[in-house]
Amino acid sequence: MTNLNFGKPRPLWRVLTLSVVTFMLYYGWYKYIIQEELRRYNGYGWSGTLCLFPFVIGVALPQIIYQLYPTLGSWVSSLSLLGIVWIYIVQYKLYRTVNELYRKEGLKEPLTIWWLFIPGLNLMVGFRQIHFLSEYWAKKQNTSIDDPFAQAIPLISLNL
Image (cartoon, rainbow, N blue to C red):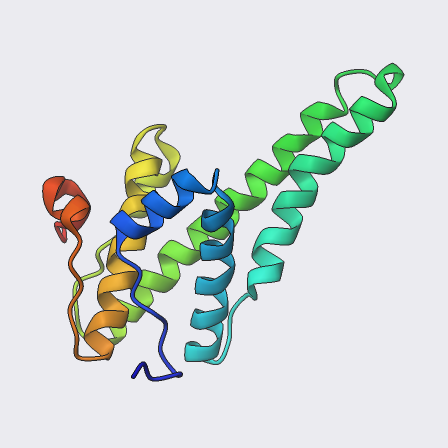
């Protein structure tokens, strides 16, 4: 039985598979629930709603306004960049949180933050964040996870 004080280990292969088959809806839920779990576990932090709501509104609202009022100009839809910037802020905070969890356990921090700002590598950091958070929760529950995707691509699971 899972301890309610810990998060649930979610292997990368499962997160990616469910995200693809649900057209990224699962990934949105994943982002929400891990923030809630981390907040409950740490006793502080941002809620899942605080992390996702500004992103969704920031991306969707300008597009809706542009479709309803095209005379305002395409600059309105470019406001969606605010949502993108917000999700980068959330990701940065999450990477710091995962590193902090490892540091508190006396382990080497697994995530390298500067990768976040390099296109292509930021995706790899996201994969690594999913993997190492799942590994952390599994260790806290004295269990292990099977993640063939992370094993197939060593860069994901190596603690660099």
